[in-house]
Length: 291
Image (cartoon, rainbow, N blue to C red; front, side):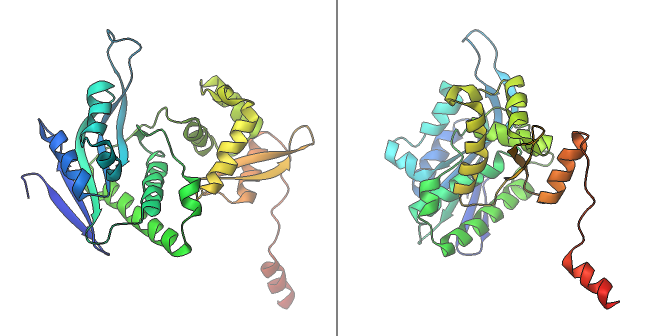
């Protein structure tokens, strides 16, 4: 093992190799990744692209690029990702490469694609990502229940390992930009329960280009409901239907860690609407009768 490299082993034959990227190392590392890894992550400081070549880059905090090594082999150039983000677009100053492999038993391509997407979906919640795709409904629909269970276990272990042991102590991200879907999702997760109309208003105020794909309201419902559901993974944002201020049924989106009753109550409190008392559960009513 080269100086600075370290390898961590997970159950099931999964090996995670961490390689510091310094000097001329990056291209050599990706050349090795193309033949000795199934997934790879590049971590470092990210930047927004300058408006013109004479301006300085704008830092956007620490972030990742997640890729499948098979894509590197197809391109016949192992350094394609690094050259694209670091040299050409100058969007990433890489510091670490994280190589993930299951030797002897390659993962199914559809499962590998789903694991890549799930990592991107979860990392988007805390970090700036250079990836532009965060869903794979086609690959997800082809997975069996056993494959999905294994993929969830693997990606959760990888996320815990990356954020808990691999990244330097004190490393924090400030997620910015990204696909429209991820920007809308962050609005709901940070702003609490919101109606479709409220999400559209806040998104337009913050410059999210939701008007570029037709009706903004339809874009919100499609990205936060249909596409989030079809990705076959833990839901990050949930939705329900309630009676809106106009008296008509409308969609209410809320973070996945809230229950429906908590979300409805929080939204009504925020809008100074009457809040009905919480319903007693059937179990509590039965216990009172017995007492």
